Amino acid sequence: MPKTKGQIQVEFLNDILENKGLIVKANFSNQHGLTAKEPTFHLTLMQNGVRSLHQATWSPELEEFLLARRQKMATLEEEQERFATLLSHNLATAEASFGKDYAQAVFVELLRERREYKLENLLAKVPVNPPSHDGSGYIPCRNFLQHSITGLQNTAVLIGYRNNEETVTLVGNALSILLDDRFYITLREQVFAK
Amino acid sequence: MNLLEQRLLGFIDRRLKSMLRAPAVWGSDEGVELQVLQLLELRLVALAPLPDSIRDSRVQDEYVRYLATEFPGSPPETLDALLERFDRRAEFSALLGRFVEHQLQRPVVRALDFAARAEREDTNAKEIRIVQELLQRALQFSPASEDFDPGFGLRPVEFPITQEPPNA
Image (tube, helix red, strand yellow):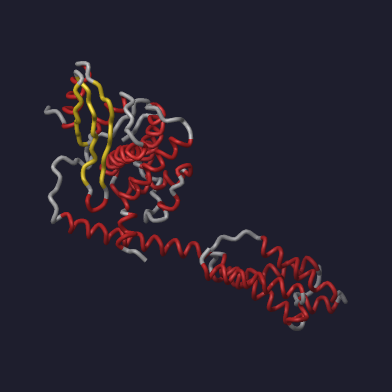
């Protein structure tokens, strides 16, 4: 079976690191709205005294590789964007498995319950009806999305953020970015300015 | 609370206070009693999302029960008539005031919030449909990125430490 883009990226980096290379710094870039481009890691590598910049579009394999290495991004803002991309990807897999509208409804229901992230203002701009709790998909969908949020918060602590308000704010801001993207909140404010 | 709701409730509260403080300024005891009841009904219309058939008679029904408690065994008459009958005219403000206080303290859910929320959700849904349409048309004129994978069909990201296994 041919390798995925992410697997090739991870192989390349493993090769660098096994040959006395280092990831000196990690940056993350993403653009939203009408000029959206693919989210990208920008890794400053050092090998044999020589620095080089390696740019790789986001993939789940590369993300897991960097998380396992406890790799933080250079700034808090970039970390938020990275976390938002991760959550967006996991939400997309839930949408593919359970249906887009249903997965989004379960996701929004979860976020309404997680008051610690203070997303009320954004959630007010999301036109999602409560999901049905009767179907066989509700529990697995909810568990998966719950795990994505809780797992990310735990991982933030693991990679070096303090287990307190800082982490909650970090994940909350990532969720804000995700909601804005999924439901075009900023774009709508610009298009329908009152 | 929107501006209309604020102004309406503010007006009702001020008028009720004034009528109870100096009822003689506002007319006869019977006239004041009926005005106070109407103001309480108007307040309930603004605040409680009850069906019309229940809401429209709620204040009256509770008032009748209240008077029955204060004047047990008496026929259903106005407070003014009951006080006249039992020579307790001096208690008019106090008795009416107690009923008003009870009405003001009763927790209500704001009907205007429900209507506003439904309207907001309709607006949100319409705006999203329009933006999606605009984006689709805009994307026709921009080159698609070959590298970007939106994630559909791929496995989810697994975290280094898991507390609960994912089920998707």
